[in-house]
Amino acid sequence: MTTVDSWDLLTAKDDLAVSEVRQAPAVALGAGEVRLAVEKFALTMNNVTYARLGDAELPFWSAFPAPDGYGRVPVWAFVRVVESRHPGVAEGERFFGFVPMATHHVVPVAPTARGLLDTEPRRRFLPTWYRTFQRVGEPDELDDRRAVFRPVFPASFNLADFVAGHVGRGAKSLLVTAASAKTAIGLAHLARNTGLPTVGLTSPRHVGFVRELGCYDAVAGYDELGSAAVLAPAVCVDFTGDDRLIGAVHARFAAELGQLVLVGYTHTDAVPELPDLTDPQPEFFFTPAVEQQTVAAEGEERFYDRYHAEEDRFLGGTAAWLTVRPLRGHEAIAAGFRALLGGSRSPAVTEVFSPQ
Image (cartoon, rainbow, N blue to C red; front, side, top):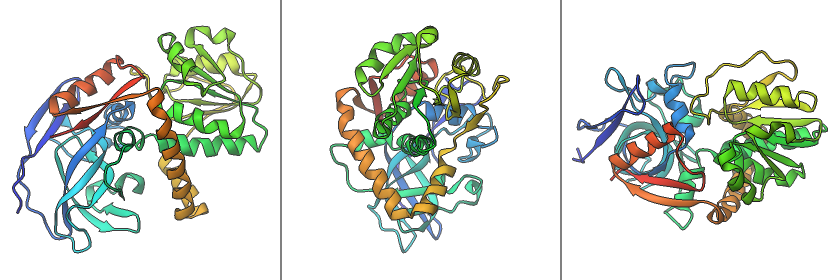
């Protein structure tokens, strides 16, 4: 057995701002298992959602069990095999996948055409999307930016396909809430390929930042809904998960809306409930399920070739508006998560964390 210095960052379930670092127990690998060293990951509201919905319909707390009263918040990370007892997996191979906030992760795997499949029975409740480790290359100049966007850009990409489909059915404009969120920015950039005029809604303090991005045709603060205008029929994509805001947007644009799509929970006080709405009724967009259907229809090679080409193109332009700062250690990680909970982070700056 390889001796490693390992720790887990545990989060109190009853107060997500409280965390504790604990030395991880030494675990000998069983047959078919690998030990992954966590190299780097970013934190977004996606990770806060995993924690806030941890005991809900998709119980993310159950993915990586923790001591009573605590949870292990999932992250999407670059990882490297530092020990292997699987004949088909070599030490030194690098992947991107779903792991807990920790220095290391031990997992049973099955090699696939594109990487590894996590075969741990306790995680079979998760869609395959979460249990797949994508094989990746060595770090390059875009590596830190991939750490930031690889967890969220698939939603942007699949939503862009969704919007393009509605253009073929007569949609005339796109309305995006939480327009400063990374997934929303990715969608707005990709939606330019459809030719749809795109209107971004954001908090008043982010209006200037969103306008300077150049990917929205018009931008309004949530306090300016009365002055915002869209062409009917419009597709509205909500990233806030805020029932009050969704109700206000629906009331303001009810005559113009053709579709209302709900994607995430960027607002820290959002609750997974909806007000009573008239038509159009909201539909939930669950990226893993949508992507699985598209891959089945299109074929893996063609789909992922399209995806990676768009991701690289998008990442190359993010340097104009996003500063990525590398940080190290569990104290920095805990502070970064607390900043997300408090809603105090600037959309123009983000961090990539290395556990060690």
